[in-house]
Length: 443
Image (cartoon, rainbow, N blue to C red):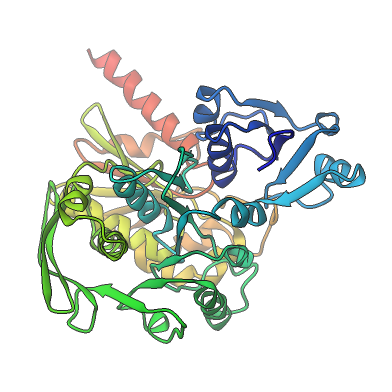
């Protein structure tokens, strides 16, 4: 680190960028950044830390800055372009991440799904036991003095995670996503194989994933899951409306029972990965048990609130596998309630590539509503629409607009899940405001 510079983050409100900015701030570095003026959910943490957030403007760039460029922005962005013209040091987000994890026992959490939830859970457990730096994909970041561990989300998009070489890697799954970049599932597997090659001490991988089973590495690979072929095996699993409990067996040895206040089978797997890493670093089992019990989740991952008798769940799910997992979790916690989903498809390329799988997963709900497709800065249009997806859904599929959320008012004492990686929260807020308004009028 360079204490003589100010670290300027271009796109500081991005989930990874805001987390990284918070880590540097906690380490005593001078930090500022720029972004759009629209409010985002990552903004609050930056404001609480007193980190200056500027509107995008080339005039923000001057001597004395080290620039961290968000991966959503090309080199043609006015601030990045000016920084390079001035000869300032410019790092891409993933490049700088590879630098700041050094000197700690680093654990990179990778996978097509489950990265943020698993990173959050691992960060929570290890932070309660030893000084731990962490960077979570929900915008949460923390740096502490003399950290023993550095836990970070390792994103496979555009192979960005290959800029890091962790001591340990968790691999939750290999699945086809990001069709705007990856050619096919074999291309995705190739990226994970390279990440495995760069891991220094050990890999913890989900045992049910056939592609993860094909990985080769110079370090031990430990598989976790529910089967006898898994190194870390969960058994005697109990899923209730309060959470999940299970025993863990490691190569024939019973490590005892663990309880998590989490729902869905995927969270049992995520917990197993966390237990496996901590156990491998000689963390006391009782301390692991204690910390698991107090985890209350991460932002935008099965975040719940109740308004006027309705249970509203906010979730980042934007891939068929994630949708299936989220509905499974809701069924566990609310087995007797009707479950409706409001889904915002995220990017045209993903929607058209995974159309049938989206329909299959969404049909696990009792009723489905769709919004128009959210386009990313890299992809503003495409040859597919939400109407195309709606025709494949048998459990509804009506298109909602933020101007008319009245179809959702037919539900009473039920569960509505708002899902998506775009701006689905604007629909959620409109519905919540409508519920609150009606509740006041009725009272």
